[in-house]
Image 1 (cartoon, rainbow, N blue to C red):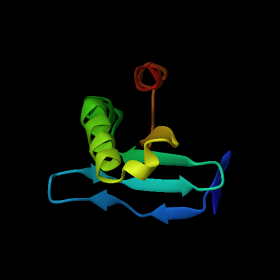
Image 2: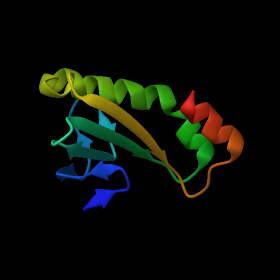
Image 3: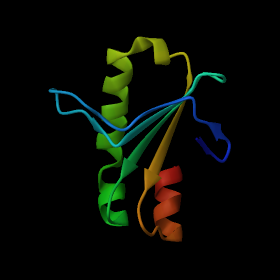
Length: 92
């Protein structure tokens, strides 16, 4: 029920809406007012290529659910393997 430093109080398996928003994982840590979004791809290249799209999806989610805007917002990227270069791109 927790992910390392993240006390998981509620998990939404994924979030999709008719406006083409797709987020693979939304996790809530209500005790610390933190929300974590994750994008999962099968390859590093697809993960990096979709970085701006993922940001847009999370922004549209926050627009639809404004109560989370004041929370600490975290974004995670998940792939089977990430190179050092890929990690640097994702962290920038």
